[in-house]
Amino acid sequence: MNFTINQKHITEAAKECLVVGVYHQPQFDGELKELDHSFEGYLTSLVKDGDISSKSKKLSKIHTFGKISSKRILFVGLGKKKELTFDLLKEAMGLASKELKNMKVSSFSVALDTFSSEELPAADSAHAFTEAFTMATYQFEGYKQKSNEPEIYVDSIEFLTGEDEKEVKTALEVGAAFGRGVNSARTLVNTPGNLLTSTKMAEYALELAERYDFEAEILDKEEMENLGMGALLAVNQGSVEPPKMIVLKYSGKDEWKDVIGLVGKGITFDTGGYSIKPKDGIVGMKTDMGGAAAVLGAMEIIGETKPEQNVVAVIPSTDNMVSGSAFKPDDVITAMSGKTIEVLNTDAEGRLALADGMSYAKHHGANYLVDVATLTGGVIVALGEDKTGALTNNEAFFEQVLEASGESGEFIWQLPYTEHDKKRVRSSKIADLNNSPGRAGHAIMGGAFVGEFAEGLPWVHLDIAGTATTKSSYDLGPSGATGVMVRTLALLVERFEPLEK
Picture (cartoon, rainbow, N blue to C red):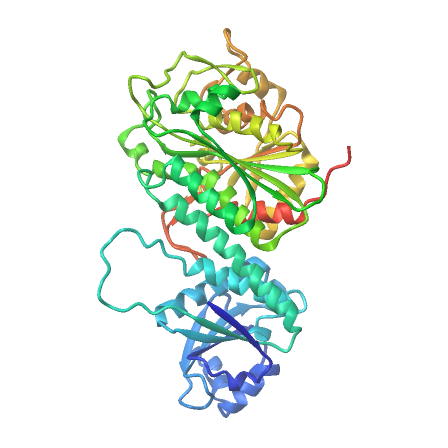
C-alpha cells in the first residue's frame, strides 16, 4: 500500500472517496467550512437534518455529484473535541476503514487535519489512522476455495495536511508497522496446529531474523537435553513433533546491558495431556501459542522501528499430547534452573514450558523479564474476556508495562502476588515446587509458579487467556485472534527506562 502526503486543498482530493472527521460543534470551521462552501451550504443542511452525524463513531456517506473531485465523502463522527482520546480516535478510524473496505474502493484521500486537535496533533492522527486501517481491514484468508469474483484492495491512500510532511510520514509508517505486527500475530494464532508446528514457528522466527538482522538461535531436543530443560521436554514427551526453544536477539545499544527478556508461551496445540480437556474445551486450543505470537509480533515492530534498547525474545515451543510416552500426574521433573517440580496437572503445562524459557532468557543476559501466555482459564473467571491479568515482583517495572498498555489501548489489571501465594506453589512434599496448587486463585497460582524462575530479576507476567481471541468482530478487527499485547510489548521496549540499582 502506498502513502502519499499532499498539501493541496481538501476540495482537490482526487481519489475515489474523501474521508473527513467531524467534531460536535455549532458550525463548520476551517477546511470543512470551505468544503461546505463548495456545496453551497448543503452540508450544513445535511447536518441539521441528521444525515451527517458528528456523534462519536457515527459514519455518514454522501455522493458529491461533481461538486469536488472525489466521487464520495465519508464523514466520521468524532464527538466533542475535549472528549476525544487516542483510543477513541483509533476506534472511529477502524470503523471508517471497515466501511471503506465494504465500499470496495482501491484508493481514497484522508483530510488529516479535520481529525486533529490541540490534544491530538496531525502526527498522532496519522499514526492512529494507519494503525487502525491496517488492523481493522485484516482478514484471515483461511483455506476455502477462492471465488471467481475479483477482489479489490486499497493500493494507495492520500493524506491531505498542512503540517510537517516528514513528521507525518514517520507517524504513518510507525502506525502501519504497529498494525502489521498485530496482524502477523493474529495470523499465527489463527493458523491450525497441524500447519503451525514448533518447527514451522521456528522457521517463521528465522525469517524475521533474516529480514531484520536479528541474531537467532533454535535449540532442538538434543540440545535441550544437554542443557537440562526437563520442564519443556516433559511437556513434549507425548508428541511426535520435536520441541523448539526459539531465541531472537535485537541489539539496540553498543553494549549488551539493560536487556529486556520477552518470553512467550508457544504451545501449538494443547490437549491437556492426561489431565485431558473436555470436548468443548479442547476446540480452539490451536490458540495456546498466543503468547509466542505476541512476542514475535512485537519483534517485527521492533525490527521496523529500531528502538535504542536491547531485547532477547525466547519462545519455548511444543504441543501437549497424549500417548504412551506422555508425562503424567505425579511425575517429578527437573527444570533447567535445577528446581524439581511435582506435576499434579498435565494441563498446567504452559507454566512448565515458561519455566525453562525464563531460565534461558536469563542465560542470554536478560535483566528484566516479561512473560506472555494464554495461561489460565482462571483469569477469565476473575477478569472476563476483555482484560489481561498481570502479576509482578517489581512495582516500578510494572508501572512501565502499565504505561505501555495504556498507550496501546490494551487494558491490563494487576492481580495480587503475596508470600502466601509463593508458599502454595512451594507446597509439594516431594519436590521444590508443584505445578497446580488448586483451583482457588488459579490465575495467581499460574503466574506465581512462573515467578519462581525470575529469581530476583524484575518481572511482569501477562495472562492473555481471555484477551488473545474474541468471538465477535470489533472496531479494530474481526472475530478470532486479536494480536493482544503486541503493541504493549513494542511500546514497553521503545519507552523503557532502566531501573535504578
